[in-house]
Amino acid sequence: MAELHARPLAVVLCAADRAALDGLVAPGHGARTLRVAADETLFVAAPEVAADVAREVMDRIAALDGDALVLDVSDGWAAWSLIGEDAAHAFSSLSQLEAPADGAFVQGDVARVGAKVLGEPDGLTILVPAYWRDHMRERAIRDARVTA
Image 1 (cartoon, rainbow, N blue to C red):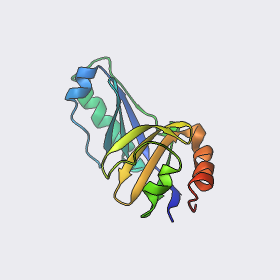
Image 2: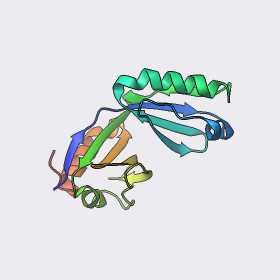
Image 3: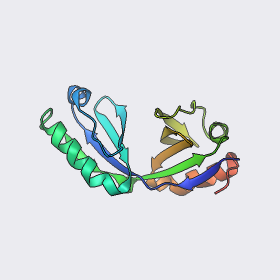
Image 4: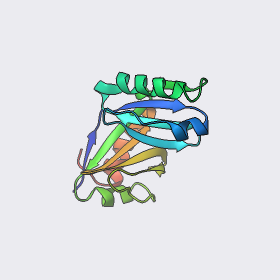
């Protein structure tokens, strides 16, 4: 049976011209790059490196697009990890999206909420707007029958 755990994550937003984002060198610090729109990229990392990730992205994007916007938007997101061998099966009870492989991500409807889903070595991480935090937990427990 899959397990559900709250996962602390930092999320840094970079909104910029498409060409600037195409040329942006990703930051270090273990941050994952999620290109969520032509003019928007999210960088997801451990909370303790959020300021470093934001600083690196700001320094790099400024040379490519003087009007770019970089913000730490971590407070606006909640992350839940589905862990275990049955994580993909549990996820299928929440969404019609294909569960992403380790290192990949998809975005779309998860439990009737717009979400980003990251493939991890031990399962999946589901990012939702923070105001949907409790809804996602309740739906995962009820529909996917995970343990929390």
